[in-house]
Amino acid sequence: MTRTTPWPGTLPRLLPACRVAGPVSLAEHTARYGPPPSGPGPRRPEAMIAEVDRAGLTGRGGAGFPTARKLAAVAAARHAPVAARHAPAVVANGTEGEPASAKDQVLMARSPQLVLDGAVLAAEMVGAGEALVVVHRRVREIVDEAVAERVRARADRVRLEVRTAADRFVAGEASAVVHWIERGVPAPTATPPRLAQRGLHRAPTLVQNVETLAHLALIVRYGAGWFRSAGTAAEPGSMLVTVLGAVREPGVFEVPIGTPVGRVLDQAGGASAPLQALLLGGYFGTWVDAAEAAGRPFSSAGLADLGAGTGAGLIAALPAGACGLGETARVVRYLAGESAGQCGPCRFGLPAIAGLLERLADGRGADPGLLQRWLGQVDRRGGCAHPDGTVRLVRSALRTFGAELSRHADGRCRGRAGVLPVPSGGSR
Amino acid sequence: MTLPAGRPAARLRVDFIACDGRGLCAEALPGLISLDDWGFPAVSRRAVPPRLLADARATVRACPKLALRLEPVR
Image (tube, rainbow over all chains, first blue to last red; front, side, top):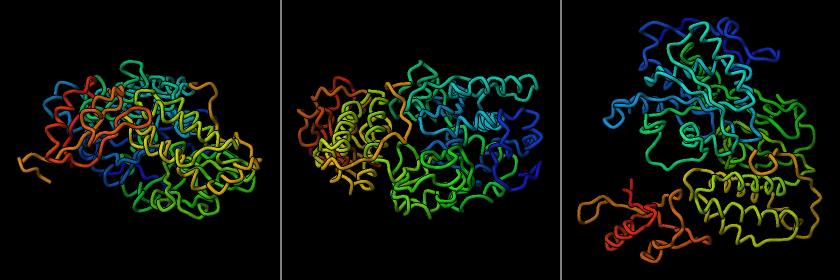
């Protein structure tokens, strides 16, 4: 594929290089990145998908699925007999239902044009005539204005439509996003059928995280080789990371995948207190010992033997004075309330597990065997990964904070809770 | 794995979104389905043994919520 614009391999790639507030305008965006390649050669759907494949781009929403495979599946489903009557659909997913994560909102607020570029290019790759952009309510106005700029400039053949996401944790799950757009119900639907076969209004549907689309827009411009100049060979590129908790300057940072965890914390000004543990990936993520994780590459491969991964790109730093069991109990109670309530094991099991954790955390005591039994009865027994993710969090908490259980049983834990943000009153 | 009749191996799968916890399946097929602490079916992830396949099909048909199915083992 030919490159129209050379661009230095420096970071940040997605976010503006300067810290001036406000979104990058279409003119500034075009001046920085140049236009996407045009003409029948490089802009051919098959050529663009092949380039995304060579780049090794994976989804940045948490699941890490290879993006080119999703693109190819939706592009191919267009020719399947059942779907032939429905033009494919593209949904840019900026729901970001996780309260601790901010990276998609920051990306949409600072670089909306790059995400819209990606949505338009993805639509071209799969043969969709329009792309729906689902965004967090906090950035809705910015994205509306960004789309209006493109309309005024007649930038696209693909039509862009903006929707405000449901303000629920599970609302970001791909089938839940489609369900929300179709019927206003932010709850996952049963698989099969897969969205790539039959999704939005029965059309083959691509649901792609907004950060993934931003990377895709740059891969189309600068090629797979450029993309791979950051990150590791197995996990190429950069990623946005939300850093929160006991760091001096919490925020969203763009780092090459594989950057040591401690160096990512340095980007956020470094630890503001001695750290005991880190939550990696998000609320479906994994607690790890802070000292053990600090030298590890922030990548799936680098964290695998700790049972952790990069997830949705989140690192929460827990200071030595905080209570990890208490934090986990608060988050699990929140996640229990955020269950869509459709599946029995999740609906009844998560509140039961939250109750046991609260008893363990506040010293009333609970049967650890019963907790293990219920974790096993909830894991992988739902229509989506909500129960699985919650179980993963709890199991990692028991591994990391297990030694504290006796102190809690004796009522000797003086740790405070309140490091991780949990919206009060169930849904927000 | 292929069954003697030449059919591909199958296992039970619960659509938990559709399942209402009526419990019929666990009564009809106690060898393969038990109930968890909240009354929802726990099915074996392994292939249904050939001798239970007819019973499994009947149980799938009997589910009032159409939440139980047999799927091929990949």
